[in-house]
Image (cartoon, rainbow, N blue to C red; front, side, top):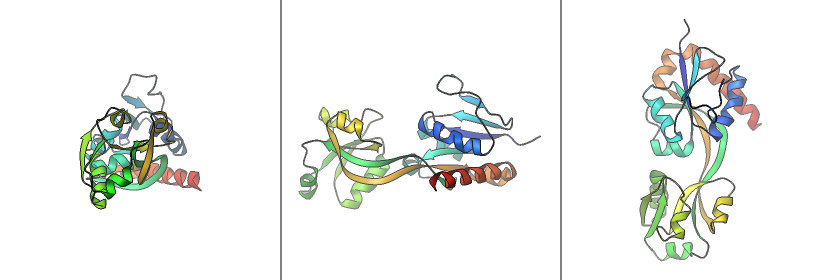
Length: 218
């Protein structure tokens, strides 16, 4: 009997942009997580199943072996720390950027230049802490889980650190980017024990992902 493999994915952009990579490996997911309530989805390969988890939980499921491999954004992996994970491939999908943004009219450069202590709202505490520490800027970090753009508008924070794709949400809420922290894309992450014990099953899929992402980037 072939070894069962479990792939952890999050709904939305990562799921959609991983489908062509799976297809390149000859595998299709048989249900759409947007219309199905199931959290474990079958594929056309009886020995591979997909579990649908929150994006920030993908590294944890893989680290502890509840999933053999998964796809997670660089933003999530940076916060997680990547402990116990093998990260063989930058899939070059779900691309965006991590930025600092403020309300239009707030003089960010002047505040930084004069050593002001800034209140920064974000769910990316580790990334924000490292970024501002490297610049010598003193900040009080406020953890939020959503609607980050609201924080400066109601006086909760001076700035936010968040993912930006097109910038349209920022503009709609009278915010703009003032600093670019890092480019973000999604990586394949693999449980280190699974890589050893299930290499025969895993490696062809990893190779297909590598080829598909390389040809898409070319």
